[in-house]
Image (cartoon, rainbow, N blue to C red; front, top):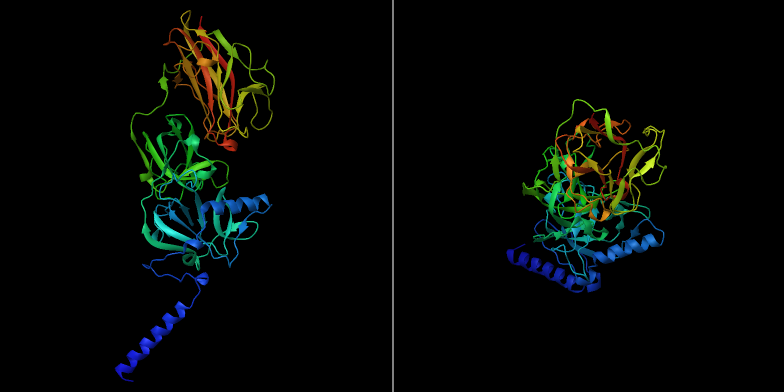
Length: 482
């Protein structure tokens, strides 16, 4: 065959192909399998919204189903931007995508997100942070995985993973890699609508009880490390979740204050809200001026005096009722719970009758409670000391502090406006301690103080509902040398 005939044949084939495509009805438009570097445009009439996907799932649940299933012949897509990265190992076999470059969105079209469950690791090599993608929803399932809305394969009961053989046809990458602007938000304002989106929290710091810890390299960290970050503006906390398989698990968390940027999500068991960062560069705590309360120390005294200024063993209190009498102020700063008396002979037994703060399963968004002694005059005797005992029933992300004030006027209205300092020498049971024993505070020396003080036992919950733990208190005694 000569060159001219070859050329004619090639032209004929090209014309036939062109004619075949020109005869295809727009309604039957299909998306080809794309190769690396190729671009794609999805017709607008085939793109649905994140809100529509959320609504389909909600409607399915309202109808008694576990998931919403999309028919295989329903040719629809969503478009979004990748805000997760598994490059540092903190995300695994999943993509988090949101519908906006700017996480704020608008009131009519807010920033929403979805998790896409994929049985493939090292996804960031293909779908890097900021990459615009289309997700072909035909035949997929919408459900919940670890408490957040997830798209994958599955059935009417649960959502599963998209498999390796098909994921490139389902998650279609475009040429666009956008600059993602996280939603600027305060931790107390985060809601379910913010799940699976990139958020940035300002003026945050690691809780002082966790200073010096790594992201997820402590002996208590199994699968994930949980570190409490607190707002210097409102005192509200959020838990940072870091995988023990991440590259930075053994890095010490910065000890200053600043911004933290990450994907807002839920923990694996769907017990509490978490923030998941892509890497340590998302944690910018470069301001060394932390917002911790003042601390005070006289040290520990070698002896306990035989005189007593105040004593409480809670034996006269009524079980499951708030602690009253003996000069106590039982102030509920936030939530519905206060310090209550209880008695138990279980593995975590009380000391006869004890006091405890139990906010777990309270249903409150936040619990903060103060148990404050009556006024104690330190000018009329010498050698004053404080001692008490504490225990916990898995403190989880709650914590207890022992403070004193010289300027509180004794009214509930002015508790939070008074100046309170931490009695840093007092030992309070830690979450890492065994939850069965009672721990002595030590003989806390108060003799270098003067004036009239109040001593407070303050409980702060994590704000995570069922994850909040329990603290117990007993045998509070302020003594002096006669």
